[in-house]
Image 1 (cartoon, rainbow, N blue to C red):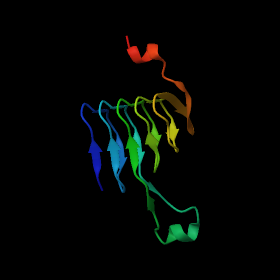
Image 2: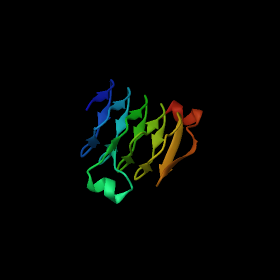
Image 3: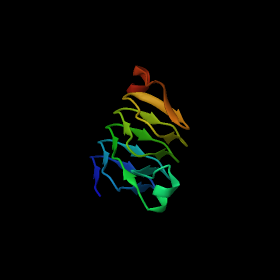
Image 4: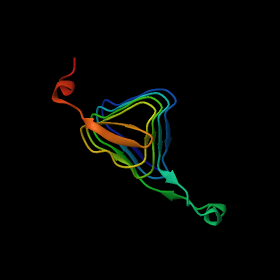
Length: 120
């Protein structure tokens, strides 16, 4: 399929992109080691799986996103600009812009504060 990568994107080692549908990565994105972005999923019904059925949904990652190490991003997910995904998270639903999200499944924990946006 198609992977679209913006400007100034850093992708660390052992990143796996399963691009059976489009994956869009915005500008100034940092992707940690061992991140998997997967657009493919299968039916829950075993008979349909035996037939080899698969569904594909695009993944969109906004600008200025940091995805920490060992994160899984599932089919159909959009991660809003300026968000941070904590290490080891499983992202199965959309994450709004400007938040810290983590967990399995990942949820928005809190907004990224103005002080944190200023940096060091």
